[in-house]
Length: 108
Image (tube, rainbow, N blue to C red; front, side, top):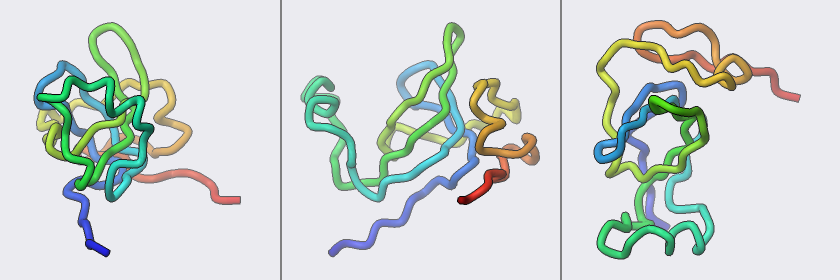
């Protein structure tokens, strides 16, 4: 079994390297854990390796809010220092501080 260490952390604000969106990481898969249908919908020449961490983001662009699933190779730290406005953020995180969101949820 390979050990994979994620480069980014929960609550960190990141942006996509190729597409105009940014978001907050709310979950991490140490390797690809989505459907084959999702994976095969990516053009073959642009498909990322499944053998890397993938991140679940509360994402935003200029037009909408959504959840994104992105490979580590396609993300970078968002260095704008600006908060993300996704409406679901308060359900999982505390107030934006020092470029990130602290986890703030109740476990059952």
